[in-house]
Image 1 (cartoon, rainbow, N blue to C red):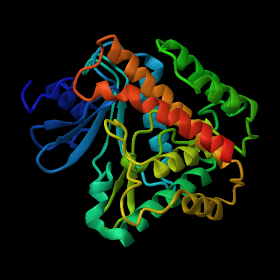
Image 2 (cartoon, rainbow, N blue to C red):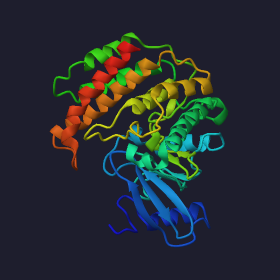
Image 3 (cartoon, rainbow, N blue to C red):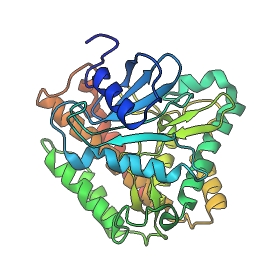
Length: 340
């Protein structure tokens, strides 16, 4: 494939569709590049030489429709755009798979930096790093303050029994990739089930909220929250638990997920929890449960990757080290739950 036609995106067909649906939007020939690949939805930066947009589509090959629902992602971003939550403006959703081979949507291109590793924050210095991470918490407070009904997302999920369903779902994921003895994982799963907290009022939950899923502007503010594929209506503290987990987790050799906790100036988890509590007014006394649940979820995800690696189904390097990380996440989850 040439630079002008990256895999999975036929630019002539895209141009034809945009000209029909949004006449005058595109003013020159389109070129595109894949922003990031992976198992997740594919993201392309597209330009006509003057304006820039982003196109999102499901991964190539057969995918579960529910896991890569473009209309869901488009809907939540469109609903949040008029609120205080920074998201890109959507341009259009196309559910006709004959255009580029799958459903897709187009949104504006937002200028900004996704910080993925501690080293990337180091040049900012401790003060600015601290400001960026606290801004991430404030943006989460703004998201959870959105009244779902008021923005047309009242039916965006089933909040009743949310935590119980989540725990069962991740337990099933674990069972699907069991091929070795994992000390403590069943204990962690059972302990989480026995200690289920009562959820606060439901909110729009991002589902994968962390620093490398937002774009930070030159002024260190959060310019756009991205990657809404896991979003739903549910318990807002699951987002906070995940953020706290990432903020306490130092980078480990071979870790395929981002962590910026080691950067000088990065606030400690306790400060993030305190700031969220002050901004949101929510009771965060059970945050240890949510953080332990985040460790469990990550352990299951990593074990799934390790399982596919043992079957020879992963492409690329570094997968041989993932199996060794799983026990670390299990131990951290158990410790977090016990120490509260």
